[in-house]
Length: 117
Image (cartoon, rainbow, N blue to C red; front, side, top):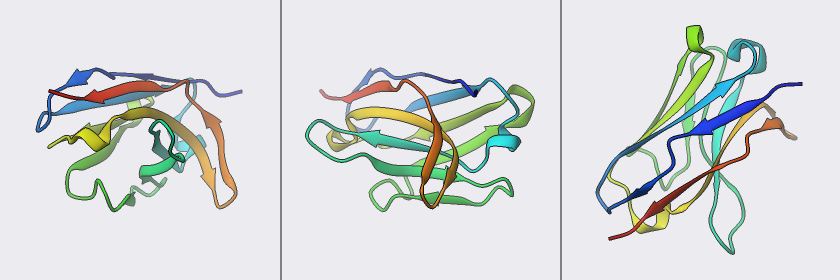
């Protein structure tokens, strides 16, 4: 069993920045690819960003150029740097691991990000 613990969610003003972190209970290389997803009220969960074991990254169209996913193998952590935040980025953000075509095997509990003035 793998546990993923997210942190960093907060209330931030439009145009601001925020960094989310996800710490895994085992080596992130053993549970890659990993990713960040989000779900806003009344909307389907969507991919925000993902990173493969080789370090290749992928981003959702709405966040490309504003968000950046990175990892720290020594800390078993995957982070999401979010810049130029917009109201529409408001959502619960989930960390996920061992993501394949059929979905991700492991999920965190989610962390709330609210962008509002």
